[in-house]
Amino acid sequence: MDNVQHFEIPADDMARAKKFYGAAFGWKTRDVPGMDYAMAITTETEEVQTPGSTMPYFRPKEPGVINGGIAKRVPMMKAPSTVISVADADEAVKKVEGAGGKLLKEKQKFGNIGYVAYIQDTEGNTVGIWQSQRQR
Image 1 (tube, rainbow, N blue to C red):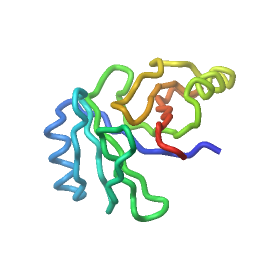
Image 2: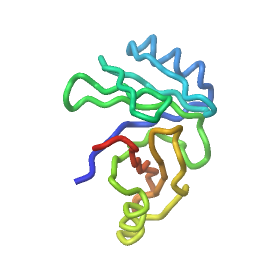
Image 3: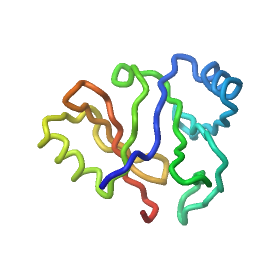
């Protein structure tokens, strides 16, 4: 069974959004180099360095709790979305299309920690598909 990896919140003004979530909920953010994206750290974490990766992974210490991201708003992502962790993003996209969904954005490399693709479900919602380079 594939699980929810994290959430993503779109923002028109990244600095304003990061400031808001920090002040309102105490979240910390970490910018992802070369992208209009910041990791949103919502809980106590332990920083884990994946071999071969220059980006750390912030693993939640509390079971069942997830972190997220704040991304520059784009036409494809107008509202918050969930990102689902899968073993193989290409295979997941095939299953999505077979179930009546559609691919919105092809799989692309995310830093050197994994791959992300975006799909639309049968209800018109945007959902991220995440394939980690870390062992599951």
